Length: 494
Image (cartoon, rainbow, N blue to C red):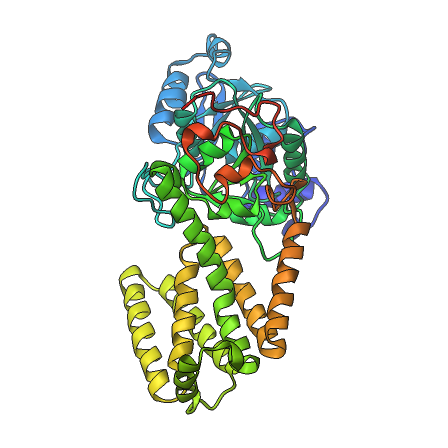
């Protein structure tokens, strides 16, 4: 190889140690020597030569399947002769390629490049590696299907095809990343989706200029309408039934190769409080669970902040009996309520993060032992009051009620800001903070659609499947955020 590089450098008038391979262009012819130079120093590049028919084969051995290689390449070319090789390469498995960039990309995606005279062909012998379809560990349901997406894009597309058996289910393939060339597949229902949404999303992804994307949650941050907002603007999920329902509802789904999460858009704020489990229960039970989530949202965002506000500025709001207990509980605490609340909230977040990062068995132990031992010891040492422990624990438990982990994390971050405002300005600061959050939510859009749909703009019909989960026979229209020309999805009558 060094002799080859030395000879090649002298031939081009370059110093032998400064030889660089020029980036392949789409207007260059895919010759054998040119492609070999592009993969110089790649030890996993395999070369097979068949002199009896004058053919050479290049492929990356870690990307191809052994059975596919033998069936589609080795056996046909071993039997071929110079007289019948042209007829063989003209058959369906072999696709002619006319530019070097397409040839290089084909090899990188698990195809074999076959060179015969001045012609080049690609044959797909890729072998998908990865785990089988399993239950999602982050989004569990009591009733309903228990399968989840995996890291292989084509396998995820197959799962969606099995759920939506319609020729109107269309796909658009895109590539993101100059280095990684990550495959992104947009999936939508033709005749239901708004074409403007498809065009806008396709343009945003196609215009990305970066080295690589590795996960769906990473991609959506690059195509947000409001990238600096703390709130997630694209729903991501590992559940096939959730994505299938979004597609039928007029949304667009995105599959990112290498990610078990798919994203759906456009998305409204209230979509993050809906779970597929709601539709597998009786509608009264589903409605009560959804209302419980909104109550949990209010508790987790404002309970601790309200405690700080009341104990700092508004003792008159506390009942007399409770005020005596609160005064006695806080008599040994050396910190003001604001500092006390921030310390305990930070401790809870540390325990939560430790439990998430440690192995499963140890993580559960850390959460239980840490919550009981540290909380009890903190009260006995006079580090905090027992009423604050109740407030912080209630807020933490309420955050787990929200189905979306990304939204739950965003709400926990906002909680710290409300605690600080409540500690500085009391109830006025708390109301100011809530007002700023609402104003911010009203200004967010997702692919140009309002983030607070159906509250702003108001759509009474959508509220039947937003704050409550109405009877399935009564939910006749698709969400207004889809802007579909085919709004009726259910023609049943009671």
